[in-house]
Amino acid sequence: MTRQRVLLFLSSLGLGAVLLIVLVRLARLDVGAAFAQLRAANAAAIAKLVLLNAVLVLLSTEKWRSVDSALRSSSDAVPSKAASFVLTSIGMALGFVLPVQFGMAAARTLGTYYYGKPLKRGMAGSLFEQSFDVLIVVVLALVSGFTLLIRAQARLWVVAAVVVIVLTWVLAGIAMRILRSVAGFFGQKVLPTFRISTGVKRLSELEDRGVLGTPLARRLIVLSSLRFGVVVLMAGQTATAVSAKIELWHLAAAMPLVVLATALAITPGGIGVTELTYAGGLRLFGTPVSTAAEWAITNRVLCMAASFSVALCAMMTFATVKLFTPAKAMVQASNQGSKGNAQSSGGPLES
Image (cartoon, rainbow, N blue to C red):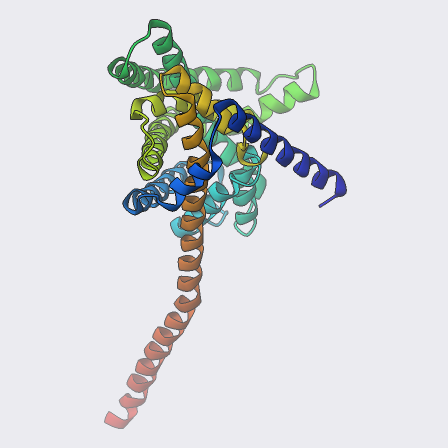
């Protein structure tokens, strides 16, 4: 790592720390009380949080594998579901210590190096499947804005959220057909600039491989919607763990604003930016800013602990299976060979 990158990382980390200090001052937060709540956190809620994190990794893994099946060629090796789960869990954990835009892509790019085409399958595949997460939070952010505008409550937000997700699912077919038409129309033309030509060429390649197909797009929309729901449930469990009185629909309505802000953040894991956006978003929906700020900080600690726990367990389990699988295979092969030798040696004796 170069000195410039180290300085950039330290600067972004410092910025995150400054933003946290600003939040603590604005909310007049008692940091000691927040850490006391962490020490006394509800064990059952934390266990549910870890399980939900595993479900979140599973959904993200399924999204990536769906895209990877379209991106890879017939000669490329296919990572197992277990290996894909491990890479996704590592990427999710890295998202807490690296800028969130790079954590998942970096883990999958390095992890798919052995399987071939790591930049296309690891980085591009991750960015493509994560673009549907962004799509879902954008449409839900519109719902949250509309809810605030008319001062509605939980029922309207939930109904409107379901309606716009279903509408997005329906319109995905039209959007994909338009993209395929654009790729087909410009694919054979000489375009004025290199960047435009390269972009259209890549779009044509995606169209040829079926990545722009309606079934895949609709599948990713469904999985991203489920993923958003799991993230909301995780936030609810962290609130329960530290006895924070925050309505679940407030968390759901503020979540799209937080995700968008975090996606644009340059601080490691969106530190500071995420907490400030959570506090501001929850305040808009009626949660006291002191409660929101205290929960936002404890939420980061608990979610980070859960994410690293899932990643560590996944890596240890995968490594253990890999360690003992060859030994089992050798024993089975040896047993089969012994049986074969016994049978072959038994023939002449019997004759």
